Length: 397
Ligand SMILES: *Cc1c(COP(=O)(O)O)cnc(C)c1O
Image (cartoon, rainbow, N blue to C red):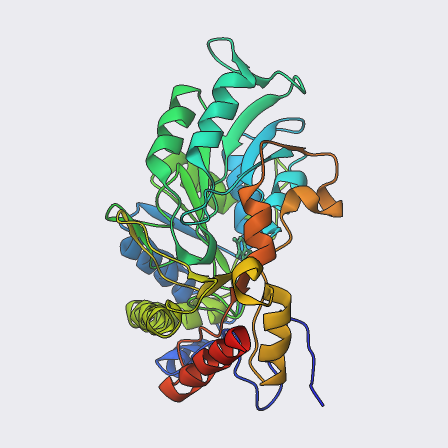
């Protein structure tokens, strides 16, 4: 009998899990300090230290902690001046969080396709959409089809590989648009030597349990702009204008990270580069083991990129290897190997029904073919061997 389970849920006993945290460093020590000092909530030395350490790691001026990555994105969109009724370009092939955040500010997503090589938002289609489907009046850009103002672009670096940012930044700034990069899956990755999470005007990170490093739950807003950084802190702490008299001029949010979570983050950040090395090694072993298999394509890395390989992912072309991605996942499940499809492209999601999408076909093909494989930092060589053999025998027989 096989056990089945939700892809997002922890793997049952005996399964090789998709991606689990590894907690082996100073986490116990730093969290104990929080407990001993009574600094358990959203004020405390570790929040400041975690923010400083993340900013330094990214070579950014400011990092502002948030309660999770989705909240960080919500604040980033407010900072970018996205208003109700505006539109924001976003890849359709992403976890839904940044798309939902666009709706939280009352704006509308416009879904863009993925490029076929590295599966990120396609800069050529973004440029074509902005130049052919929109009208520039010298200060604002309007979508001809909807009449709405386009305000921002949110590239999402999926699976640990960065988006080709330069063409996106170039056209965005030419047309007075803000760029917010969602690096929730790509901490540790680089684009032309620059760190993912510090590639846009504002960037966002997540420290959810399955990300490269975790604080249990957490996020970060990253920017070099002093005024935006100040405003990010203001909005995440209930927009207090006078903290003594409790005077507020704006609606704020309770989005601060706690000192306990930040303590965990400081410990995890110390091992981030080792974790990325481990993930890259895992990706290389999958490549060695699977690249000769007919019909299987491995996620690759652009020559301008350094990928964190957050989740090693393969494409299964059913016209070449007898089974499709879903059938492969079933077989892996029978062998007690946890795997995952990509996310339903958001232009097909009922949650975002009615939003515009532009020339999408690559994203749907990737969605139907992709399978993410066990990629925990703690994955052993034996376990990985077992996964490789399982895929080989599944697709060859
Ligand atoms: C995980 C994730 C988020 C959301 O982060 P949370 O901390 O879970 O709110 C946002 N964007 C992407 C691409 C993600 O993978």
